[in-house]
Length: 245
Image (cartoon, rainbow, N blue to C red; front, side):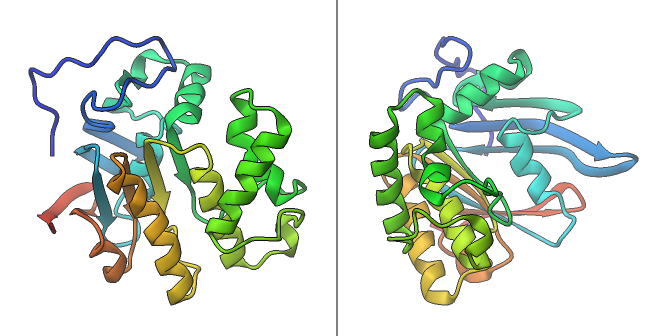
């Protein structure tokens, strides 16, 4: 799915998310990236519209995680352009990109990526605290998010005391606590049992059903089947694309 050539994004200040309904939530246009001399992405174009769930599938090493990092502005592509929440990332420095993510993007990376010595309640509250929220309201929202992913009562725990599945749930809670318009998730339920995976996937999909968007990487056919569209990457290119609903 590509952005119409005549669509003009709304003008916004650097790091500010555009109003709801202002076009695709993320657009990648002919994006290419390589590690050393090994291509990871070779001219990939992709967009996620409001209300849409897109599943990235394909073999390991096909470019899925690289594409997710590029879409989030965590990795600058060596060619092509990325527009995130209406902002051209090529024109933004690191600080405005980080501000843009905080204001409208939830990110779930593989293995949780929690802060090692921080209690879960404060780790999950970080997106709100970094945007200036007072501590106690942020902690209240964090506890509510933890309860939604089945971690009620574990706010004082630190990552070292968690199972892999619990850490992944906490990462999902952190991604959702600020009610983002777009969620980018890399294998968000891979370490969860079937029932826990369904619970977390329901929460992620609900972002899109409320008018946001979800772009997720998965190797699980059952997870991909929950998407509106499946994009299969292989060898750094889009090998297949299917509309599922």
